[in-house]
Length: 301
Image (cartoon, rainbow, N blue to C red; front, side):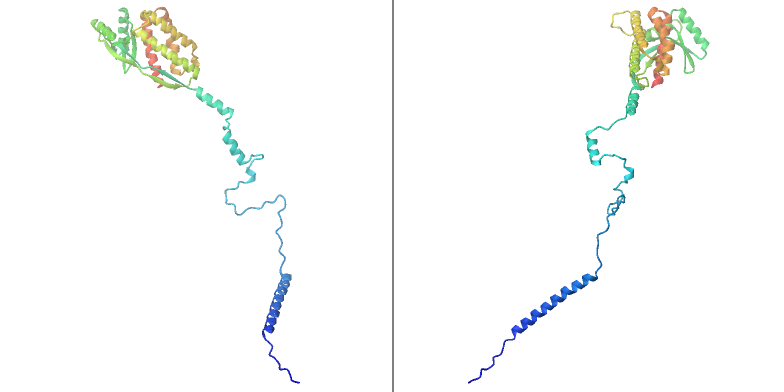
């Protein structure tokens, strides 16, 4: 009987088995090592939460953006809501501020007056007052008004304040024929525009009084009259207008210069203008009134 011959077995199954065995060994070693290392690592826990009442500062906030809670009043509204309400509502004004503003508005009033040109007829000027007084007495005996004014280190004798230059020169020429050295000199009443601490109601009366006085001076000075009234009648009408305005004025709240002028000059002049407008005494009172009126206005500018 014949014997079978041996065949050579392949090597590759053995190699594959060894590789699988090695891979299984490496995996088992890796898992076992991780398990052992976890047993020696420290336990990691979450940080404890702060107790009530403690504050945790946020280091990332830049300085100046957060306001301390102590500076914010209790019950303060949300900033966003406050900004929306501020856009819808007007800012509140306290009652005291409103009263102060009203008082400031009512505390002054613009008083105005128009510029006017007259001509003064001057009969003479002296360095000695006695000589001026003697000339004034002579002029009164001649039927003229005469008022002595001290100005520029001289005593001047004024006979009239005339509205038209031709009338002034005519009067000066007549006086010169009597041996005097009379002159017709421009005399101006400057415009008035000043805020006075008189209040609105008193200020309006003061403006009306100023205009009435200007009309009265024009009537005395012989300005052309379109009303058809005579000069004396016009003076009486203008005097009544001034008196009506004066009765409405509270003199206690008028500037000192105007108050002196009203008390010392105007009331006495109105009596003469109403009762005897053509007299020498009334004309002299008119000249003094005009001088005082100009001085009072100049003191307010």
